[in-house]
Image 1 (cartoon, helix red, strand yellow):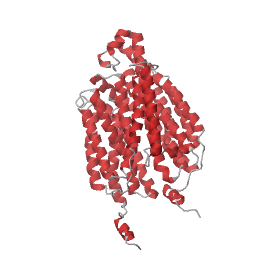
Image 2: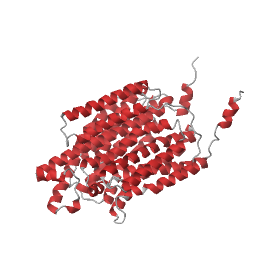
Image 3: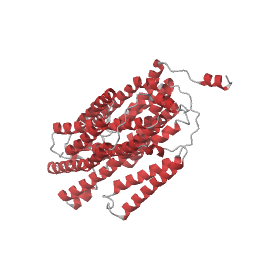
Image 4: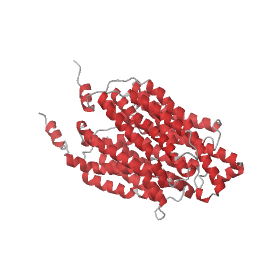
Length: 520
């Protein structure tokens, strides 16, 4: 035995006990809970926030988009940083960024500062999303991951459901108000930082990795350029105009440069080699389409509940439950059936079909649609998305070598979130344009321009105007789903071309060991 071998053995960390893992996961799960809560708690508060701060429909879109874009763009970077620096320190930094963004958002004097604060929140949430699975893999052998991963599923479900409800209650409580939607995450984040400091003990990584900062910058700049164009087009300039040409050509050129840089980088943010797999390429396209259709359509439902239907933020939160329930149940049942029978493509096809039907049903809503019908339509949409979303990742993971599992999973997550950001921005622009057009038709050009695209405060409107405004927002929201339905239909076509491959019965660790056996 060489001198280096006993030294290496001595330096290797001792295997964590079950109790130590649970203690470490408690801080991690608390951080994840806060990150997910931040994304959902604001949805019901946004109409009130925009009304109080005098924001426009475009601002409504950007408050959602900026956090999603910042979170998405930084996920691959956090993963790379975890190879260079302490994972524990990085998680604490991401939580600290989130706390900073939350405090700025809570004290914001105007919508401009609020949008900047959402970027800080997004970067922090991106860190939690990227590092949670990396830390779990560092602590827990792959063979034992299953017994712990269910906890994270429960945390995700509770935070997703609790967010809109808590947000609604805070907005409706006079002595608290919408600013507490941002403040409420601060004590939980600080508690998570302290808990992680006490319970999480990981060796520092020593693997030197050169981060492709230029590639990350070009990807973010390219997508941001297209997002800004889709938000401004139709309101500040025509869709067919020289401004559109500048934005689109500029965005596409930046993304083309990003591809060139990524193809030459030693450690690319998004490895281009994964696109050689037909299944991975198709699942990524389908993930983008799901992101565009789902986020682009549903993020404006809360505004529809409150403006078109006149519901309180608390009731609006309760009204989102059927979709969440459909998603959680269908994803769980589909997962169990796939494990039992080993067949997965039928759930992708069925999920995309049901999702498209849900979008078409929601395209029929207006200001008079009953809560029961709305609940059924949202349940249908949730069931479709539940069957589709996670199983796209399963199909891709099953088709690539074990050494590329991490890159493939992060790429799918990245593109789905990017699709969501593009969907929110593009369909938000469509909504703003439709609202402006219908305001002009109902009240005349002078009244529409006087409103300056602002989301109306229903409490200040006379009854005869109130009914018209409700009708406008009801019809405009239905138009969103009418635009989103063909996008969802494209997902059906894409998944039909995915070739079903038998699911591997080996864990990622076993597959990796098998792939590394030298051929004789």
